[in-house]
Image (tube, rainbow, N blue to C red; front, side, top):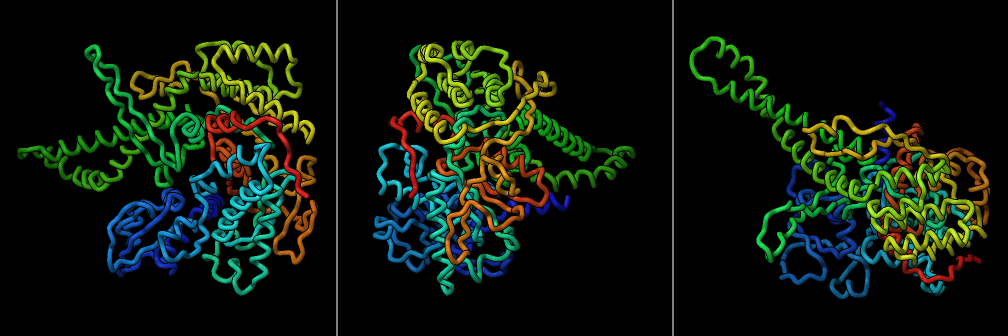
Length: 607
């Protein structure tokens, strides 16, 4: 229990640290004191889109008001002057922004914290550091330098906020190595200037990385292209895959149902609703990494529990309304007064519980509609078998050709995973057959052309990623959530139980964090920015296993990888991991990038 509490406290480090840094900034760069009896200094907050993206996952409107922010506005919005009121500007130092203001104070907060243990570099202009931007064959050296500098500047901000200088490991001959070289140099230069170093003195207090330096593992997206395409089965990853989920907010279109309307009448407009899925949502925190059927069952259990509590309050109210002098009634009244008082005092908690139940009922129902309409459980199970080299019980061609199984994109994702995961590429004759079936199903074949070239390149460079022996165990259909009173009609959806297996990124981290000798990571470069001289070595000076690590994916990450790392570290007592990526994308967004990468794939060579 103690270790779990310690893990929770440590895992919250980066979210807490960035929040502390933001509050410090909003308090005019003076540490914010909790429970201060005095009135806050009332002020205006001005931000650009970059600043807005950083603040929104961390501070609510109420929290901003508690900090004295009476008004928050976009920098370039039209507004009337507000005399005699101090303003805090939180913007990128661009020429355009500087023209709108007179002074910029560097805060080193240029990254977005989405979870206690997860961050991304940017949301606005993310195409500048996207997978496509990094892997375009026609990218110039100057353009690549700009992309790398943008990534490094944000990573530098991350480590300033964390208050720690990492040991850096990275693969050779990749964009990740370019980031490592530049980050090592930037950290080294800052440490060299002892008087102005950002890593000495006040580094926002002691925390997770106080006693041992963390390990930073920089990996290139190209080590594993199957995972970003994979259909998933856990709640958070499914929400990101099939719904509009952005900066911890999910946007839903509520269906208006089937109505009898006169011929020629305009269809009824769908209502749009937004829900924030944040750390204060206890159901989300508990179940975001759970298999979807488990989530559906838990929502149903929460609903039944709420109804029981609600019925008890109604019953007690009814008893309290008894009239007459009946002795039994008077006795019952006194016995239940305490119970009713307790029930009434817990009413706000009950209302909040109802709000969360309604929220997750709506979100889970929207996810379930996609699962059933597209047979996503079938895709997930089949892809797991492909990636783990398990015997397939159905022909791949049959699924691609089945008009009732998924969208054209689902079929293309499935085939690309098959193509990436198979050791022996299909013969030209077989490939033509697959291509015809994909075309007949309405698929755009551009992503396949890119993946073919990518696979040919990785085959020359190194062996393709291995996905271990992942298995899914069908547990039959659900019981509780299939009864007539359930909010969810799960009939026909498989109840698949996941068996934990390490994805490539997790396996690489495990090798480097535990100091294991493995051909996959033995030649990873080693950088220690605190060393007086940089060394081009793959031999780590530190021989002890690391307790804390940050995994950062250059070229984009996803919630599947994040959840796999979360599940991995649960079995490592006292160890903590943070996951970061240059951008966060789902399969649709990734395929869109791959679709438009010109062919003639070339590698990045670092002198």
